[in-house]
Length: 283
Image (cartoon, rainbow, N blue to C red; front, side, top):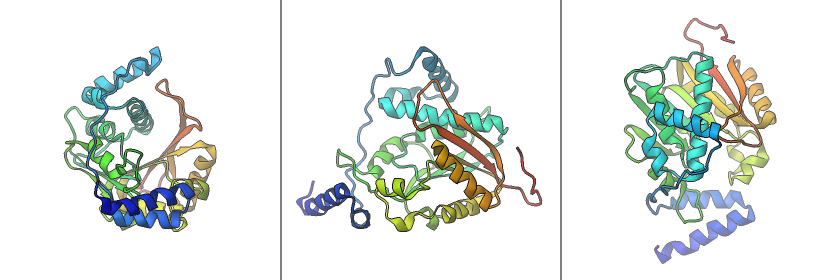
């Protein structure tokens, strides 16, 4: 590590520990620190799941061809990534979702994108006898956040993406993203100031209504928006935002699984963007 970066890196660490996010965030955005992609941990999955959870995990791995990911991933990343896939699978089944081929998708705020292998496998395989062509972007505002190993989220995202074709991790504000998409995903968008600040983001970026409006503007008519929230308070606020935006909810449920138990609960909501001339709701 170059000594020239030692002072700004120490400043980022101290400011983050002190909670001075209005200074911490712009410094790391300026530094854009990279050490390169780390090696994935290849952790043993022995004892990770209950018997029922193991059967669920085996079904998902076999159905979506995730054997390599099972071998390469860490303990927590594997567990959570299968949970994410199961949430999507349940929502898509409930709404009988049909995806186009080719498919263009955007994942808003994916952090280090630890679940990108399962996400890509799901999108290429959903109701498709042959693999669907998928172009997938992950757009992360805080891509330069440092982890304890002194690697950034962008470093880890590079490792998780690996050799997936036409998959891009973009370090930018989603509000500057303009690509039309067929599918938009929002896993745990920030809705309350306390959570937003706790994760090191300046107050000016907490604009959930404007964020939702922009993301919806990217989705082609007939496309899909999938949002996952933590806890009933976030779910209720999210549904309020949908109502204010005039977006009918196609399906919503609390997702429980034999794979893992999370507290607070995870709530999944699927919105179908009306096609031209179609203003009906599918409920």
